[in-house]
Image 1: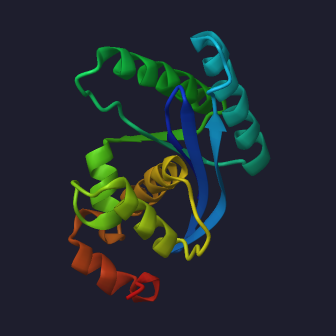
Image 2: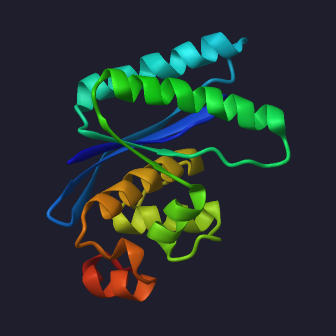
Length: 177
């Protein structure tokens, strides 16, 4: 299974593509769609849709994973993230991908073992799980976290619903002391 994970935003949209086969995770690609130069929301959304569509055509994922909207105090921010989620989901639907949606808390718990993990902790564990030594921008590691969470949830034999200890026992080769 090839999974495209997305961390939606209207300033930066992170993405990450992983291959998951027989409990083995492999990083295919990651990056950020930088939208700061776009002046209007429609231009930003058009850019997100076009970039994700290009990635889908190039890497041919079967599945798509995205964070659900986090509702903070700033309603305008939530609306803008909702727009980015919408066009991201549209790209996935139009390319007939299987879609998984996960809360930030679910993703963090799946990757780190606690739903209260920081972005830096998620970044560290994503790099560990994917055996990456180079830097991964936080928005991209969040997207990769969504993709990894999806792989764990879809694979019924993966200990994603169990404790971090169970995960460590199941995948000892992935743990870096």
